[in-house]
Length: 476
Image (cartoon, rainbow, N blue to C red; front, side, top):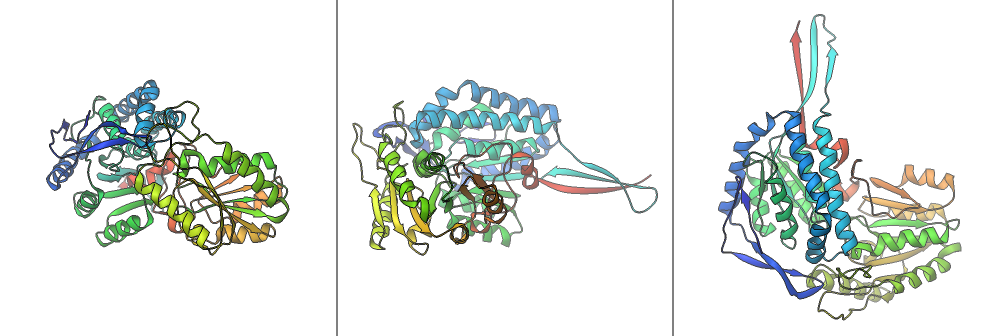
């Protein structure tokens, strides 16, 4: 199958292609993906620029119909598209199907938002004057998305952009062109005017700057690495271009002495190792107080060793492969660094399976302190470290001792400590007796410090990025 670029309402023929390989079985080639040129990107920007005024002028009902139709098709095809996602990215089939379902729910939610466009009519402080506060689309939005949620993250950027009247250019990660192609193919049949949604597949290092630097693009929404995000922020700032960044995390999960051991182990197992740890919200630092430390570590190791690592499409698999060889090598290199720094590495072996893929066992690093690299830098794999602390106050200090601030969790039966942690954890999202990963689609998503920049994604808060506020005065 060919995964092609979609520009100005047309699927483009291409001769420059790359193989799309299944990380569970490198002999399984899903298809071949286009490699867009600078000219393709220029054409996509021009198409979006031309289409933006037409889409902005549509009625709420017209936008609702488009987004609702896309959501309905995603939900109807969740098993089929979930299988594609799992073959392409490597997460388990259950996770793949769940992600497609979430994408459908996102489109359904934002279909409703089309009908909930709000404003204010106020009396002026001056007599005889009325004031209307409304929201207008920003125009053309460039969307740069990662490989770890190849259909949900494009959905949670595209859906609000369209709901609020913008035209978009999607630049997906090179590793996952199939999911982006499938999503845009669905949108192409919903009645959207040509040019409102454009798909440009290719190297981010080449196409990203073109999207960011072009004055015809009014805003950039990016999810990816911290170094890339900082570069985008600088480039957009220099051009006074609206920007939204979701980047990394080094998320703490605090486990206190009074925690329910079963609840804590379940939350940490899920947060650290599900989706192969390839989530920016993963529980990568487990901050555990002295009284429960040994029992917790022993129980978590037992559960970790019992996880079935295998082919993403095997229904018994609980953890799939790393997404590619480079990510696998990065995961293993951090385990070497942790061991050299004095940590004890449990698990983390490279695994062989019936099919050749990028398999490794989940890994736990014990005996670490907050200053070690394993606790400072994002690994983005099935690797968690344990930091032993004296009490709650020490745990909170360690949890906040990071340049990141996306998600943080605590396992405790103390209402006092849970309440204090929710108020004082330096993170955009806080979980109590739940994994740090796993969020709802109708509420805001985002972090503090180095994890996020700009307004929040998802829910009603998405309007902050995808619109601009207009204030109009009228003399009665």
